[in-house]
Amino acid sequence: MSGLPSGPELIIILFVILLLFGSKKLPELARSIGKSISEFKKGKDEAVVTNDTPKAADANTTKPVNQDNNQQKST
Image (tube, rainbow, N blue to C red; front, side, top):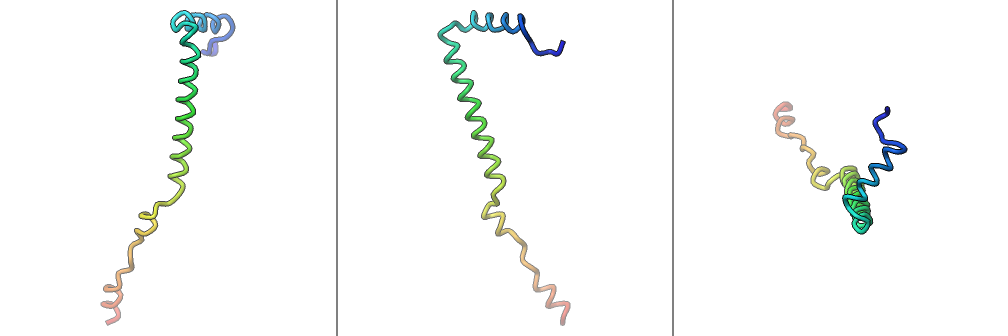
């Protein structure tokens, strides 16, 4: 009892899905699920790429050295 359906259980589940959605809707349903998965993967890949590249604003936000403190110490 692993939790995943196998053999006769899987056939019964597929038969119930066929009864619920009908034979005409199943290809449309599978196509829309496939498109959703591919869009999710594209979005995930784009998010990884944008997070890896540094933004121009982040690269220019280094704090300048406070020269006033250095001048005060030397005088």
